[in-house]
Image 1: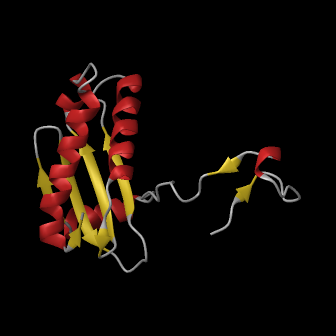
Image 2: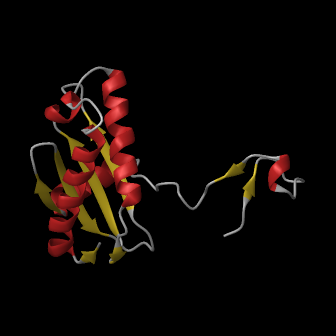
Length: 139
């Protein structure tokens, strides 16, 4: 996949901003996709998150992140979403392509300090290891 530039006539990176298309997450958007993963998928849970996974027919993984108002105010919810996205991005998922839905529980919004991302990352890794055994993908 080649570089994607803001302007079509630009040929060099230093003349335009380079979009990082390879690092972007492909997310679930439609309500029916979320419902399908909830009803037909496998799940794993811990005290911070619930994660669902369902094999798909696409060539790539998709992820949906849900953070309700019980987690905290908008600033806290957005912070939790950023941490979950980063933790998911760091995973190396191989094998069957899947749709994932990650639901944040209320204690995830109360994490503070330098160890907060570490706790979220550890939780997400553990959940995906459990889901990998159930659905059929490897980390």
